[in-house]
Image (tube, rainbow, N blue to C red; front, side, top):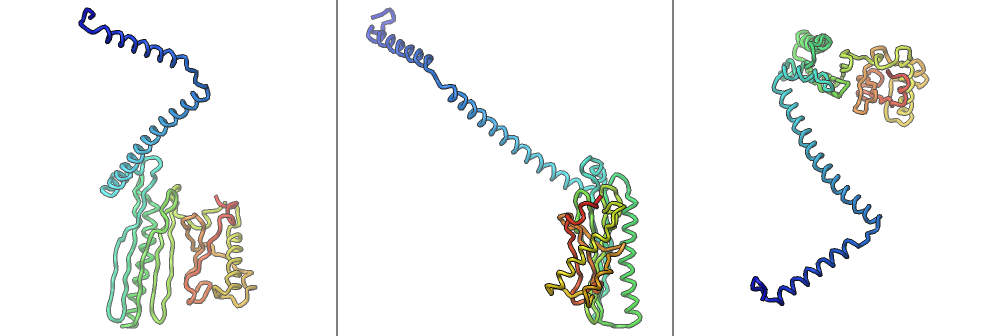
Length: 300
């Protein structure tokens, strides 16, 4: 027995086990690990740590972005004052939308008219004179259509005639705001006409086709040649009938200075013609998409 009353055999056994552990520790310390294995282990540990950090950052960023978008949407829709203040933030720019300013409806068994008069709303740094003037022009255009409709009713009585005027925003991105107004009229036959209004958000100006191009460029000839090429191709394939008995008549064809156009979602110029302008009414409106490659050298 030792002084603590532990049997001597147990004490010797514990000492032997301790000696065995010391031997294992010494062997471990003397173990040689290849350097490339050490480097590989370090790279693996580093990659795992980076993945954890990226995952945590991405989750946090998505949460922040989602919350920010929700806040912007709620704030803009809840207060025009807040929307105007937010438009001062770099990168947000002016906020545009189109709303129904007035609805006109005149319906009987013999005739009808359903008209939505749009108004462009701009939440910008200052009251936009451009938007104010454009709204006057839009209102004047649509109210003239209503006046002509009512004049026909007063003159001809109960005539079978109809008119629908609708609008929608066709482009509203970082640079462009484009509004389209469609007028569909029915009498003995139906016809549709369309007008477009464009605002360059970077300049705050109303844009016509010529404003897209370098001032010294002959943009009208360049676009006209592309339109003629497409018309000849359509005629050859028989997909569209144009108001040209002979394709040689196209030699003098040229787009107008006030040519109707719009930009599609690829920012390609689309030349637009209303019913009867360059084709029979049965063909409806005609459009020509101008590839960016055709005009890239003359665009501003």
